[in-house]
Image (cartoon, rainbow, N blue to C red; front, top):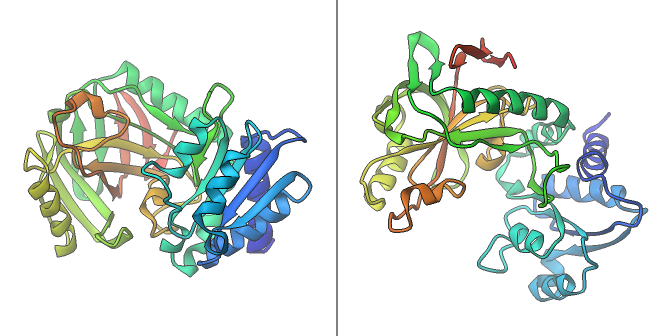
Length: 338
């Protein structure tokens, strides 16, 4: 199966297995062709929706006014597919959020052009239907997080990071919408994340192999050590680019420190250390662990209060060998055991 056929297969599975669209579903596909990946996905989805009531809009040629006008005439509970080389920003909110608030289902692919052409196959493979695994693995991890107040993470050379705290209610991204009112997701999927209820109870060392730069692309480097004390990054052995990111956070956030917040378990088995994507929000689903730096977190923002300025949420991608939640091992040799 070549990459175009795989894209069509995976796109069809998203529509039929994740979104379980009915025969009379109206589908709107908004796309651009400014990147190889966007072009491949547009062609694939075009074939997937050919036998449904549908409309296709080339964002570059039609423009914002046409798109906004089309939104006002959409049948209730339409499915909107967004294929974007960057991001179709037309309002102060994310377009996906505007659409699901209006009652529509949304499939979103964003910032596709941030990935290299040689990473196209990695991205297409990451769209493979794996929701039963995501549901099972994330449910096991969720139950362990809710029952325990201890997380132990081992990296190379005996580096250990520990969290001695209860955890916030985890958020899962599995593509299972059967119990959800909002049927919307940004793809690729496969993740569960939480954060410590007591943010200052994170201490130790973790090995990092990638982080987003100021160009909003992931910078993959030789693995380096990040040291965390009382929930904040205090030192590292990484490159100057990483220090620039840390300094940016220190200078602009109120506590003048680099707070660790999100504790993320990526579950997508098609992405990993050897199967990379330069677009950070897609790559954070890789089968491994990531943490967010900075005070900002949309899901847990209220914990710090509105008066606390929360600007940055920057993920770091970690090379983890073994993970324990309480007394239960959930990762061994860099692979999940759940």
